[in-house]
Image 1 (spheres, rainbow, N blue to C red):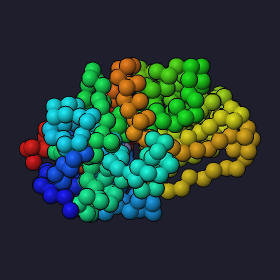
Image 2 (image 1 turned 90 degrees about the vertical axis):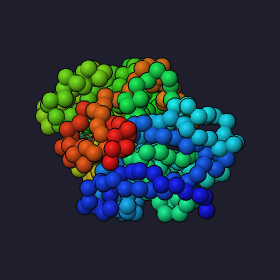
Image 3 (image 1 turned 30 degrees about the vertical axis):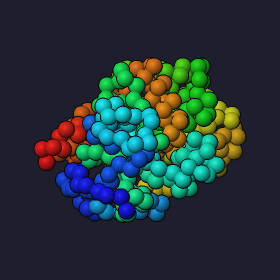
Image 4 (image 1 turned 60 degrees about the vertical axis):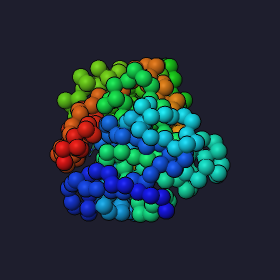
Length: 355
Ligand code: NAP
Ligand code: ZN
């Protein structure tokens, strides 16, 4: 068992508890490990689903739970065999901190499909036992293979959300061939949705945002949308019937996906990245007419995450963030549930020093 030391963190003790200050164990870096002092950590809606055990049928939450998988920080120590990083470098960690490295998925750089992957939080910790703890903490120790290089020019608070919201939207858009002149829909203008708009726009697509929040219309255009549809207005929806090449659904709660499947052209694809607590109903004829595809997509592998970071560096893309101290995390969760975030909370981890 690796030697450990105490690190400050914020954790939830049960599905109904608020997050509160605590101490967790981190391992001493082994020869391939990188020790990162965390500067910023984004708040993903997945953190909230996990803290409240809303995904218990697939990923039951083990408490205490320290969420956070949008991590940017500074390297303070490295193991003797580390070659990619040295003390003083910026570094980032996303949703994965390990995988078996031997399966065909890992060999293809698709660690997000490895049957033995280790998620950044709420996975078994093979080094020190118990479960892994995420980025709502002062530091993290990760094998260099799962640590990303940060493009130097990006604002760090805004870059942290790229590690989940960025890659989760970039990966399916690359997979399904979002390019210039493709008509692309983005459903739900939250953390993931607003990154999808920026990335799809940078890829040259014609971007249409679907939102339930009329107050987000101007922002959607500023973020890169060519058109904005208020999804509760069925006449506005109907105008787009049968016209989309690709739609990315990033909604965190129950909603009617058939209304969007009907907007796909022949052979078009709707990809779910949003992961609501309850199953969604699919109307067979929405898929049958038009031979349409319904798919899903999880995060992204390490090589593609680096590619996405470099792409965002080149195009100067970061999240629009509201920077908060860790002490405001519970308030931030309440606002996330009301779709009241523009468009990602990013925790300034320096605040952890004061409690
Ligand atoms: P978020 O910031 O809370 O955004 C969700 C957006 O969904 C809201 O801003 C809102 O947009 C829309 N929405 C919320 N409730 C709705 C309702 N009842 N009906 C219709 N629209 C509603 O969440 P996020 O962090 O972007 O995450 C979105 C989802 O993706 C979550 O379920 C999260 O767990 C999941 N996720 C999946 C992956 C993956 O690997 N597949 C990775 C990360 C996150 P409008 O105000 O514009 O309507
Ligand atoms: Zn996430």
